[in-house]
Length: 328
Ligand code: UDP
Image 1 (cartoon, rainbow, N blue to C red):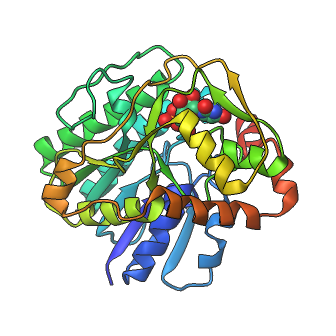
Image 2 (cartoon, rainbow, N blue to C red):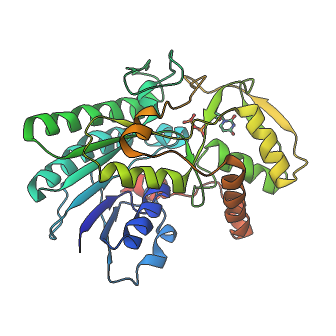
């Protein structure tokens, strides 16, 4: 049985990856410090003998006694609100955390895939973004802590590949959505759905003309799975090229939820990218991958998930453990 270590296992993407690798017959070791991850996302896996969980912070030395075939590094805060609140932890998990996991991969002779992001392109001047675009990033803005940590992550990963011959993969992940996103992490989709369910106005930032391209989580997981098993070491964009303005997106959520909530306009956050759309030519050619779930199908599944949550969750302001963590 092959063994895979997944960091950020209790997070949105990490928990879906744990399920997928268990389904493929792997032994999965999940690791998470539970700052932004939620144990509820994976507690249904705890009874499986093929699943092990380590409560650990990867910015400290990572010790895993078992042999490992694969490592997926998905530990990181990933929403603008999170990295504003925990900027230093965000920098550390992308830099020190990645260094520890690369070292672990080398010691275990394991293949490692790191989760990078479309944020490496910053507020892009090229559209759509292909992997050979180097980006337009403000290193000292509020998003800089995430963007630069991820750019460093790519650099050190390529260095381990070139210098140590490590088998490495880099996924540049574009906006992804689905069940288990945190309701109040500030991301646009849970924000709009939460507002609609509470009967509040939908807060569109700026004039709403900025665009994003949203990928359903199952499609993303399939892309990650194929990339891990491929022999390509250069970064690969994974995302859904179906681009939409945030204002149109708000309208879609109104229609989906039947909410009478009106749209209100709020100031645009600093360095909010104006356009974002992946060029997925490389993923198509190298992995034979492209998304198959339409936004309307994916949104329906996601909405059903949010509706199924206990009503009091809708009114919690925090869905994370920052406070306890920061006190330590
Ligand atoms: N956004 C918005 N209203 C909200 C939350 C976000 O209009 O309540 C906008 C945000 O300014 C950005 C887009 O939606 O232009 C996507 O934001 P998100 O935080 O989900 O992801 P990212 O900016 O990292 O792509």
